[in-house]
Length: 242
Image (cartoon, rainbow, N blue to C red):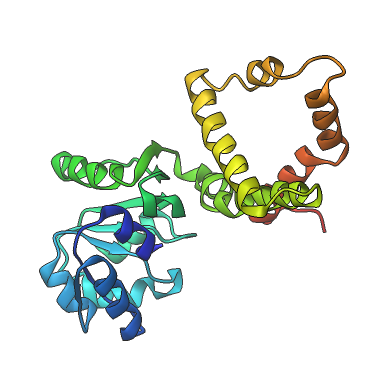
């Protein structure tokens, strides 16, 4: 995710990684500099974005907290309160991005919380707003959001694969099918936003009684599309059927 955000910003970054070659590759790809230690990064950066594994919170904070001016966490399963406890007295923020931030089209959830410096909060929100659409969300719903927009690109990619596979069985070239499917997805998303998420209205516009769309929708319902997505979110939340 760090790589995706850096590509989305399209600006030189300072970065570190437990694998030095990985940090070097990121710096080479987007510009900037791979640093040897987290402490050096904290001394030089205006804002430190925490992209490490959640169990490393305390270890990283031991290096970063004495020097950081502000931190932004994108750590999963790590409440903002835990981040602020690890970085006492330092402005801390929590975001949850999705991989389309790499092309400036991501969904980015933001956990609003009382900010010590509203001006700094505005700067951080503007920074993440460059990556796509920032959506404020209660922290209690952050895992649900993860299942929709952080895991979502993988789910949507699977849907695209399934449609392309279906088209190739009927003789269409995969590249042509992929162009049609992805274009339809992006266009339909734009249409739904314009129609204020009137999904029923959009479906009705292309569905004649007994027509081809109606037959296709019936097949999807019989195939368990709704149940499958429900099961997927349950599985993400750890509440799936055993």
